[in-house]
Length: 206
Image 1 (cartoon, rainbow, N blue to C red):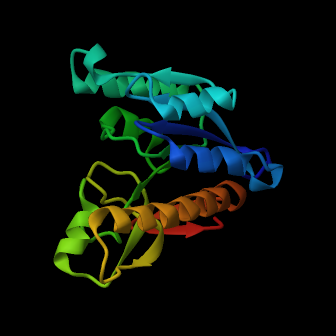
Image 2: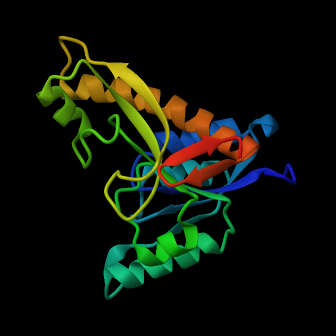
């Protein structure tokens, strides 16, 4: 960022928060250039929130079931996130699709990961679909969130070879390990160097 202050990250989680933990660990180094200022979730009592508590990071929970419609939930989530004035919103295992209100406020600065090499194998079962198709290489993608499912402009990708004896769990674990490194490295670069989204192309370094 131009003023060299740490970029403000709001991280949204739905589960164990291993990617969140990797970001928290990275942010402990001032040279990383970013700080997790809040962690939000769509569920109570998950390890991701516990990780934030242990790191003394503020948390909030916004459940879909608390609202009369998905649109109302989306607007409330955007309000909760916006209260922390993020430079970047990171969906780290967040299992809900954000909607129009959220994207109107944070579009272009919300990123998510997908456990496949987009545009191949979108949706919930990327590793299983890749294995079933018989590809020799799959991987993980970091993308700028848009209104589609895993369709946003690609920020970074990492390749993971498919081994002959892989099952879905083994392949997914290796993808997640590579994904975590890619996420931390790329979010750090976005924070330190800036980035430009130009149509379907994302350029790091502004």
